[in-house]
Amino acid sequence: MSPPPLHVVFVAPFFLAATLRFIAATAALEGVRLSLVSQDPLERLPAALRERLVGHWRVADALDAAQIVAAVRELGRGGGAVHRLVASLEQLQEPLAIAARELGLPGLDPQAARRLRDKRRMKDAFVQADVPCARYAQIGDATAARDFAARSGWPLVAKPLAGAGARHTFRIEDPATLERYLARYPPRADQPGCCSRSSCAGANTLDAAVLRAASWCRGARSRCMRRRR
Image 1 (cartoon, rainbow, N blue to C red):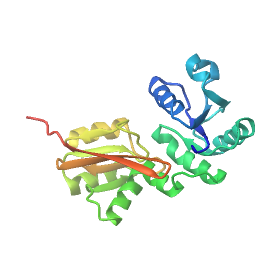
Image 2 (cartoon, one colour):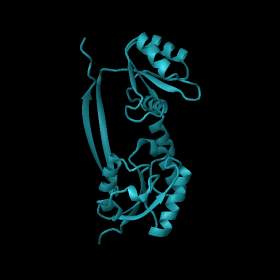
Image 3 (spheres, rainbow, N blue to C red):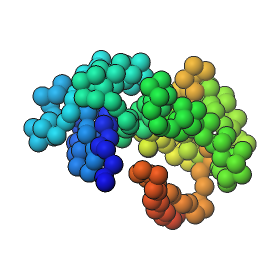
Image 4 (cartoon, rainbow, N blue to C red):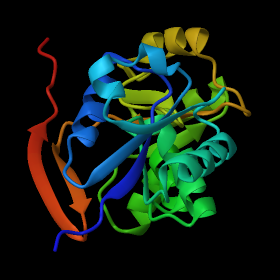
């Protein structure tokens, strides 16, 4: 006997092309009944995807955990009990974890999600687990950035604490590059950044997925490319 279908709620603030690919792939999974939470109106979703939905709930801010919780409860009333919450954006992982905890749904622990988003906390966790990690520091002002550069040497990588992918991420080669970066993106105590020593050692990545307690992992080895002079 096949397991009962899962009512999955996918949180997608906007129906961007990349997001639509994730939504379509989720909708195509066997045994999944899909609902959406978004800031975009349902009419912006392609007709072929609209036809595959159990429900849709529009919110003002899809990054707000409280609004996600309220939306999921409404979708549960209309489409049956919700079993999972998913999202493809890194920025959504922390509010999604908080919402799942509030709703009693399986998901990432909010503290683990916080470490995913906060790069300093992530690196702290690496160090505590004896995972090799480049030298790093939280930077709350220009003086702290210059002091870290003096201790660590060049090149450096600077990015927001809650950086996603390579957004607002810069490689800093020398003092002049650092000053240009500080002039354009001055760190503040209430909005600090993270600086780390750029490494040219080998690097490994790992993708993992879990479906009904079965897990699949894929590893890849990459190398830092050093610029030729």
